[in-house]
Amino acid sequence: MTALLDVQSLNVGFRQDGVVTPAVRGVSFTVNRGEVVALVGESGSGKSVSALSTVSLLGDSAQVTGSVKYDGQELIGADERRLRQVRGNDISFIFQEPMSSLNPLHTIEKQLTESLALHQGIIGAQARGRVLELLEKVGIRDAETRLSSYAHQLSGGQRQRVMIAMALANKPDILIADEPTTALDVTIQAQILDLLKELKDAEGMGLLFITHDLAIVRRIADRVFVMQQGEVVESGPTAELFANPQHPYTIKLLSAEPSGQPEPVAENAPVVVETDKLKIWFPIHGGMLRRTIGHIKAVNASSLSVRAGETLGIVGESGSGKTTMALAIMRLIASEGGITYKGQDIRSWSTKQLRYLRKDMQIVFQDPYGSLSPRMTCAQIISEGLKIHNVDPDRNQRDLVAEVMLETGLDPATMDRYPHEFSGGQRQRIAIARAMVLRPKLLVLDEPTSALDMTVQVQIVELLRELQKKYGLAYLFISHDLKVIRAMSHKVIVMKQGDVVEQGTAEDLFKNPQTEYTRQLLQATH
Image 1 (cartoon, one colour):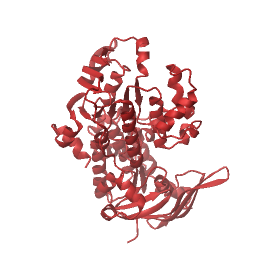
Image 2 (spheres, helix red, strand yellow):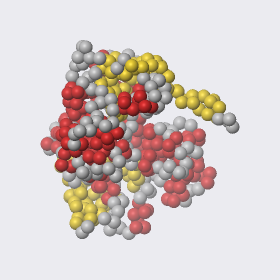
Image 3 (tube, helix red, strand yellow):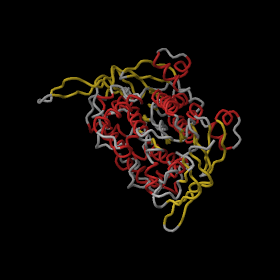
Image 4 (cartoon, helix red, strand yellow):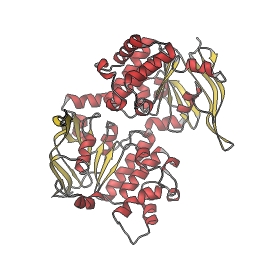
């Protein structure tokens, strides 16, 4: 049987200043109709480059050799007209971050109809009917009411479904999905994976799935190709590869899962932060006089406490109120109810009073690339807080930066580099170092590992546990990854639509969940 997509001896290099840097070396794989093939590996392994090179989407600096055949026809060296015919029509892509891939200025309807008009000449009422059919097929409820929506008005899961609808618009033979579920909640992730599998079966497509998450591979793929530093180091049927991995790198990937438990909390550990019936409602204004006509109930009557050396894991889907609650605790957004820091009621503190509190409460965000200034060096980023809060004014700031870089696993020799010169894991370490240089008492960690490779996730979890043990830090750890929550947390609260639906020790909650919603979250990780 002839493979639908046949890639043989693919080599890709990127030319800069007359020098060609190899990115992919001698890669070969096939995708058959109705089959799911996974390309697995860490960032920089060449997965996405291999996929993008199939239809020449790498740009002018790329030098591509080897063979890429679609349905028996060679695509490397094919003219632009032929490639345009294949792109979007025969081979479609779903990318990792739909917010970057969807046009923020156009409605969902306009973006979908544009593709239909361009590739199939379908316009008007016929196009609208096809768009509604596609949105319903990918599980968008009340599809007609969503046609006039913009990307920012949709949830992460809805945006990804729209991306899938766009990819399916022209009934492709091959769907290439590049990390399509990485930033999604576990329940949404499970839905998207089930949806892709259903669509693949219904449409008879071949699916090339690119990911760094082996749990997803085990769930969806028929065959696996493991990539490391631009080469395929191992391949085979999924069940065989998981049961008997041969290459050391594959074994390393399979064992890369956050595990263990945090250090026990001292019995006499003081409470760092406490909330009492915390409520955060955002008013909805309407009419000519912009009166309040309703509220978005982000958080309802939430009570929690965190002690020194303790991690409180906060779990829930997007929109459940996890991050909103953490921002209110840090007094970055308005709220009602009690917030005490080290026994002091800080609800009524002025901006000036809060300034002294800021260095004690720090936050690390999900995407370090977005939260680090691209115009500042690593040293400038880490030392910025030292200047603002006048910490250790008599000491050389570069010495303080070097100390915290060593502590967070960074080489002080790299302190004059810019964020783009570091890997994703290193950038997250810089974000942690920026917070830790102020020696905070409370650290809010908002999805700090979700965008990272599995091996890097393990390293960051171990680093955070070490820092907590050394400094007695209190952590609010927000995540949709229950494996990371289990490895990090002493206590866990589960949130749904602004309500805390369950809370308890991590051990009790994972062994004996009390609510159906918690059971659904745990089930979605298996």
